[in-house]
Amino acid sequence: MEREFILWLSERLPPHPHLRLGIGDDAALLRWTTGRDVVVTTDTITDQVDFRLHEVDPRRIGHKALAVNLSDLAAMAAEPAAAVVSLVLPREGALKLATELYLGMLPLAETYAIAIAGGDTNTWDGPLAISVTALGRTTERGPLTRSGAQVGDALLVTGGLGGSILGRHLSVEPRVREALQLHAAYTLHAGMDISDGLALDASRLAAASGCGVVIDLEAVPISADAGRLAAITGRTPLDHALGDGEDFELLIAVDRQVAEQIVREQPLAVPVTRIGEFVKQAGLWRRERDGTLAPLPATGYQH
Amino acid sequence: MEREFILWLSERLPPHPHLRLGIGDDAALLRWTTGRDVVVTTDTITDQVDFRLHEVDPRRIGHKALAVNLSDLAAMAAEPAAAVVSLVLPREGALKLATELYLGMLPLAETYAIAIAGGDTNTWDGPLAISVTALGRTTERGPLTRSGAQVGDALLVTGGLGGSILGRHLSVEPRVREALQLHAAYTLHAGMDISDGLALDASRLAAASGCGVVIDLEAVPISADAGRLAAITGRTPLDHALGDGEDFELLIAVDRQVAEQIVREQPLAVPVTRIGEFVKQAGLWRRERDGTLAPLPATGYQH
Image 1 (cartoon, chains in turn cyan, green):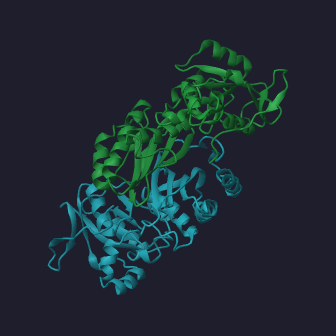
Image 2 (spheres, helix red, strand yellow):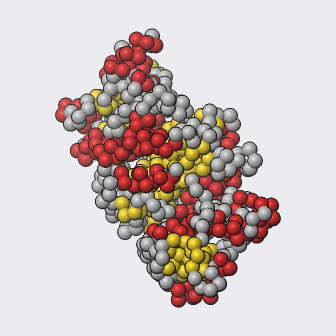
């Protein structure tokens, strides 16, 4: 099965300018750009935890497996370079499933010019697991990390949040271009992607930078999905926007003047919203009407 | 569980000269050496296929998961740089199992100066799967690939073959140093590691180089394990040496004079044996007593 599958795949993988050697040898070979660091991230998605194999088109699962890794490269403001894919497939229908998963990945790989450099394809008596490792290169401006936010910085977010479980979590649009565009045009202090929920991830960004963060609850951009989900769950759309996770939007810390400029210019294809500021007091906060700070629970997906 | 585990792990990961940023951000950052290509490989091992969780010390499983990836770097004569590790753990006892797996990996990472740069730790209702992606850098001599063997070249192999299922497949000693040493001291034409069996892998090496290969059956170095296993299975030790796989020894194609030199000098800590030669006729062959070629079945592990 692996041989047949590798033949099928090798006919569908386009050549890539940096890929000196792709599938077929013991390892892949990538030409590397002088002076650029290697950014590497890995994310595994599994049946019944990150998707339900028997309820969705496997192409969407393949798309998600690669997209969540691209989102991590975006979080570092890195240019995608290559990915390797490990499939662990249920024995029954393994070949068909493998091809469907790749058919979901290949268009995304093409969009972001990332080389599928290799992989490993296994079958077993267990459920489906897909493990992707993505490599990116830092730009001339270096990486965007979590630790650079400064007290007084504004917190920005792309897109709208909440309710991704209604389907958006599968059709993730990684904010690769958006991150590169912001990183090239403005001085960013810190950044990450929202995978576990705005509240939890914002608290992590602040903690990594040695400060706290205040969320301006009225400013949080709430997705239409959060509203639809709230109608089902009886919770508020804001609750969903704060804690649902799998939004894969960018959280960015910038100087407050730069934030004003970005919000005014709206340079991206998705909206950028100012939703808070970094403060000296460690922790996650909301501002009361009288201006004092009150603790905000760091809701989100705890692994 | 993931948080507790990451804390435990971050205390045990030593700093690494090339690792600018390890676990804790969205991705890891590796400083890269100018002019060196990135070698990347991924290998997943799963319960009941590559090991039996309830029959072996999980540290040996962790060791194997990293070692098989290091063996792929060795096959390319690349210097190990970094690895990322994705664990998919059965829910019950996940934390304990994760730490044991890492305790098996960490000494090996130290031995080969490979940075554990990051990972992803998941739990689910399925069995254990461990996916490792390893990054290496090519040396000044460039990579060793499968495609450079020439008609007339000799085929060399390190160590002894067969019977790894008796335990050696878990305590893999990747031939990283051996590959680098040979690659630095001699002109190698092609190479790979034996993962699926000498016969099958030698036929792959020849096919990738556009030629055939004759195995000198009397010269094949047979491990003591192959003898022990033959006593159980009733097959011959040679059969086991040809087809068992998971030897993780090196197969190397070199000019025949260089082969003589290597075999005479025995520069490695493990024996190097000349076991055949590359020929014009595609396929895998053995030589009859009268000097004619007869087809040799490409036995081995078919995925």
